[in-house]
Amino acid sequence: MARAQIGIIGGSGLYQMPELTDIEEVAIETPFGNPSDAFIMGTLEGVRVGFLPRHGRGHKLLPTELPFRANIYAMKMLGVERILSASAVGSLQEKYAPLDMVIPNQFFDRTRARAHESTFFGGGIVAHITFAHPVCEELGDVVQSACGAADVKAHRGGTYVCMEGPAFSTVAESKLYRLSGMDVIGMTNLQEAKLAREAEICYATLALVTDYDCWHEEHDAVSVETVIEYLNKNVRNAQLIMREAVRQLAGKERGCKCGSALKNAIFTQQEHWPAETKKKLEAIIGKYSEK
Image (cartoon, rainbow, N blue to C red; front, side, top):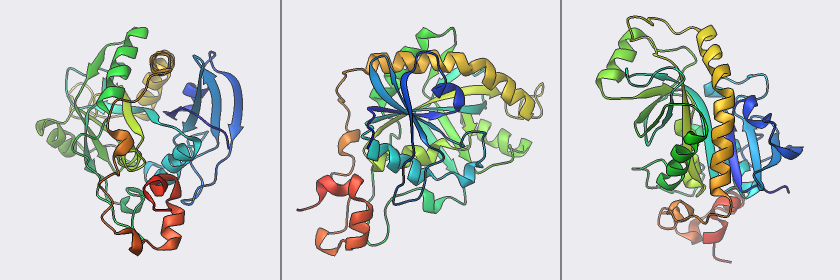
């Protein structure tokens, strides 16, 4: 099995960066099915990195169709300890302008059809992770620092509203989120963050602002053309930021608590763990299993 220290989830531009060397494609099967696509493994700043196109190459999967569990479980199988996630978002506040970057530290869940993709547990083993602070602050600090490598305006902190999609917000929804103090809105990152915490992997999001959602009187509709235009403009900036983040993380030991998130979270006594579920979750709960 190939190995990677850092996982990066995002669009195709992130695994086509010119600085990436020793590239190989790795298909991974997990107990939760196949990930969104094969992983692109490469070396960046001397670090082995695994890139995963979130929606598959060619952008073939709706947000609700994403195999979140398979994506994160595959990261765990590769030995990944930190996940850097890049995604497009709409801005809900004037201060976050298109082409800005946001490193949110909170999530608000507005999804409805993803309960089965929001936890690895069930099937006879119950776990309740602590999720008050869903983003690894240590990793978020690195991402914020790495934004200095690109000519972008970066904002640290804020709340990411994760909506169901695939349609963008109505004006009423957008105004409600805005008045509630939410900062950016997207369709993917909440489940990634939950599962990464269960897998004891550090997680942080680099949110690429593409539009003002539909609340702004001068931007009363979100067009796919606008989103793609700004995404393309941000590709190189995202590449530079990810490269710098990987450089800063090279050889850096984790000082956070993400790596022991399950220590007191598994409620089911081991003698009651079903053998099939125990085997299925081996990559995640194996170190807590009595041999």
